[in-house]
Length: 461
Image 1 (tube, rainbow, N blue to C red):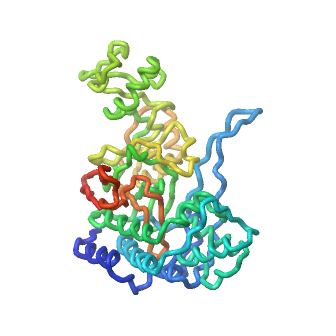
Image 2 (cartoon, rainbow, N blue to C red):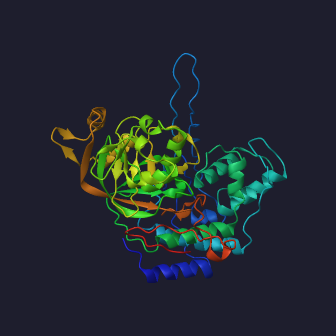
Image 3 (cartoon, one colour):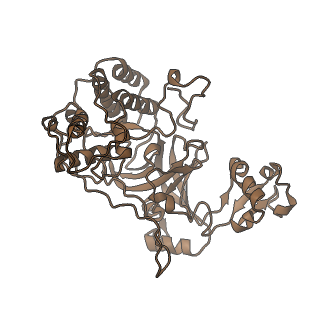
């Protein structure tokens, strides 16, 4: 799928400097019910009656809790949207630019009212703040324009708050507290800027959409397995932290590694391993990390001078097993950034709302189910790679590299604002500060950039 430059520049110029698009976005009247992604068509953004779809509140994330009669219960990943519409498809660029035009008009018209810091609102509350909340939600179409004068926080307003929360990747509580308040108070100008910046990052895409493909939207910290244009499965993910960001990548998934070893990158030897060994000389043995020389011979850690960076001249490799940093599955996707998808021995971070803790690679919750989906068309001598066979292979403890019969396209994208074909407009936090324009940066602050990959060259916004 190619987005030709002349079309891209024309749309960008139109949405950035011209009038808002007069053509409405696709209607959402036949859109399916979702659990954490609400429907906002162009008509609702313009202030007319939104589709009345109540998205059920996702289950509260379960944390590990003390149990006097047994072991700690394992953490459970947060609930993510079951919306079948993928974050990225062949029309995302155009749909996002159309939405940018609408938000440009909203900004020119004065945007929307803001709520005072510390505002907390819930069902049953009354007063002028409730009216202001209604006015705010009506501007983007989460609430019907004929419901803006009621001063009571009723069930209809709760549904509207849930719709807003769903579009922003927030827990659908239906009440206004700190995170929802922060999202409500982001200006129309900034929302427009997010849409334009996200579209710019897609403009040169050459991603090969197929019947089956995978999308990682970094700001959403989710992984989508897409099949026949619909999200077959969506997974909670942990992506790169701000100082070790996950890059934009377009490539193909080629191999599923079972019980992988992990070769520690030089950068992590410097940043993590050497400081850990200085604190605790037994750290390498505890983590089952071996030091190998150029001939593959194992070196005694005590033979190295850990007050220097000399360890970077060796290969540090972690054995397979329960403590391996990649967990029990690594998903290979050849790319210049040397990043990949993988399991993790520590599941607790999947229960967090903000999941930016990785060092560039992406950890996937329920990765065995994801691996089964990837291997569906890959046979083995005794049948297919179903869950029991996958579990048995992992349980053997032996490393096994399973090549996919047909590699699956995968795209890691950075979309802080995007629109789906039905007109739904979504926003996420700009965790890497990539939406900030160069002239808006403080003096002497370097410009954040998307790392180069084989398919996506560096670009500055």
